[in-house]
Image 1 (cartoon, rainbow over the protein chains, first blue to last red):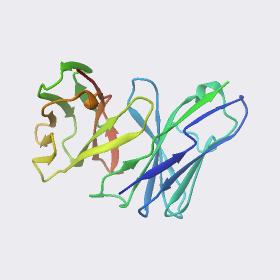
Image 2 (image 1 turned 90 degrees about the horizontal axis):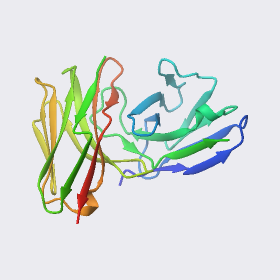
Image 3 (image 1 turned 90 degrees about the vertical axis):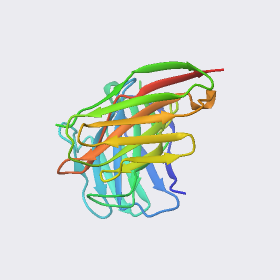
Image 4 (image 1 turned 60 degrees about the vertical axis):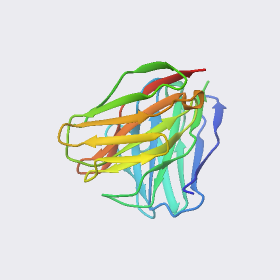
Length: 118
Length: 112
C-alpha cells in the first residue's frame, strides 16, 4: 500500500518550454503533498508543501511564479516549471502524506522526474 | 536550523556482513525520524519510522535506533545482501513547520 506515482519519469525539452509533472497517490488520500529537488550526490531540498484545496507554501528562495504547484484533489498534485532554463535541470521528487502538520504518518515518495533542459 | 549528518558517506562490505549506518542531527526537538532507501535514479522507499517517544523500530533484517537527547540514530542491517546496495537517507521531522530535513545519505555497496 501507500503508492505514489509520479509522471513523467524523464523529460527533455528546449529552453523556454513549460513542463508539468504529475504526482498521484494511488491507494490513499494525500492530505499533504511535498515537492523536492535533488542535485547529484546531494540531499533532497524541500521546495514547497501543499495541502489539498489550499495555496502551496514555498520554501525560502523558491520562486513561486517559476514553480507553480496545484493540489486540486486528495490524490493529485502538479508541479509546473514555467519557462524552463538549463539551470532548472534536476531530479524532482514528490511525496505525499495522509497527515498534516505534526504527523505520525510517514511520507511516501514517488519515483522522481529527471528534467533536462537543453 | 536543523542539520542532519550521515557517516560514512560511502561504505563497501562483503555479502553477509552486519553493518551500521549513522545519522546525527543538531536539534533534538524532533517529532520523528525516518530512514529511506534510494536506488540510482529513483525516488525514496520508506524503511522505518521512529516516533520521538520510541527507542527503536525493526523490520526484517533492519533495526533502527533513536537517541533523541544525543541527536543520534543508527540503522543496523543484518546479514547484508547485494540487493541491499543503495543510498540510505536519514530524515528528521521537526521545527515550527514540521518539515523533513534530510542528510546527504550513505552509499552502500554489498559485494557478492
